[in-house]
Length: 351
Image (cartoon, rainbow, N blue to C red; front, side, top):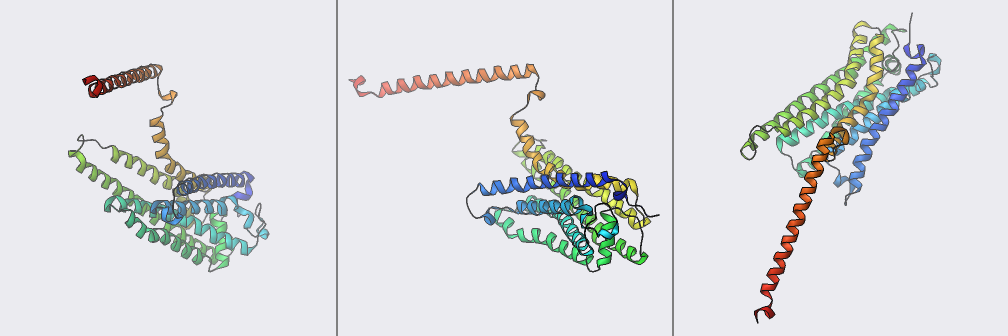
């Protein structure tokens, strides 16, 4: 007997839409932060935007669109005769949803890989602003074109994309025409699972090469600084691990669910619910990685009372007072010295 988990429990749809909304807000924060920085600088917008900022904007648009058309819209665009909970659409709207969800989530995953490769090449090859501007288009356009191709391929057969929509987004078990479901599962592998795995592999390799490049540069600087200091390498390592982790936490449950569906031709309920819980949060994960260095720097500049004992605070106050007294004494001595100098240079005094 066919079973649909979205229809079985209304709370599934509520959480899907809630998580989708949170991801959209987080992605919007990234776009807002970048655009505010750009508008605060003089000059044309396109000339001000950097290579990495361009990719970040595209990636955030992918996260925003994917969360909107997959999780937030969910069953609204599904044909109403499917009898799924909340379905009020038609086959045409379902095809549109399949196209847009595939395009935006592919754009997000591929832009993640593109951003990692861009940072890797900037560090390893020492790209200047001119090199970044010259190579901006390939890094932005390649994920866009591949996402368009994957979405178009899926929509060549309306029945297949409708089945695939139900399979991936709604978690329906295998039912209906067997040939159509086999085609849908094949398209899931070719246009969904394989591109995501390739993007994950490229992203991981690029981050590892980036960390290695930073380590090599820091070793060359040992003659100018204290040997063994690896602050930049460790910062790159932690940021890279957070970047890989954000992608892995969001996409590995979807890969597990997809491969189980492809191999066993049935929906695995625990995998389905885990996928629903974490995949919509990719925008939130990316926002956390994006804002993490700034928050870390802010905490280091302004340590909170929760991270500082009363003794440390008292010592810090005493040190600050001592510095202020020393500065005041120094200024007073400088003032006296200037007065003596002016008196020596005064011609009336010489007479």
